[in-house]
Length: 116
Image (tube, rainbow, N blue to C red):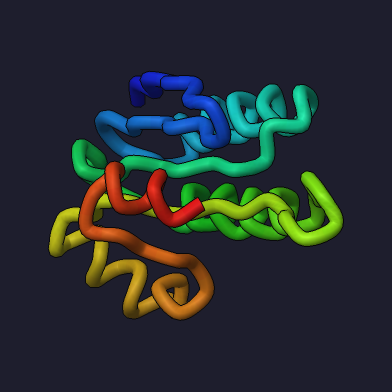
């Protein structure tokens, strides 16, 4: 999997290409760990180029969600993980596993970034 990182003023956008599976999940976790170490806790994952998602990938998403939400930026603002642009196949997987009720999902990266 390839991850393209774009650092915006208030948000980090990670564009995922390929498959998020047992082989690539540690790579995404490492990228998110690096952002959290810098106290960058508003993260958007652009899934528009993601071709596959396994249970290992879902575990990374769940872990990232809880870790970003545990961070406070100010007294009124905290961190969060948001998803953008999943294909119908990926969206169906997120729906079947209950992740679509747990994570905010936006039609595209622009809306997801703008939601912060």
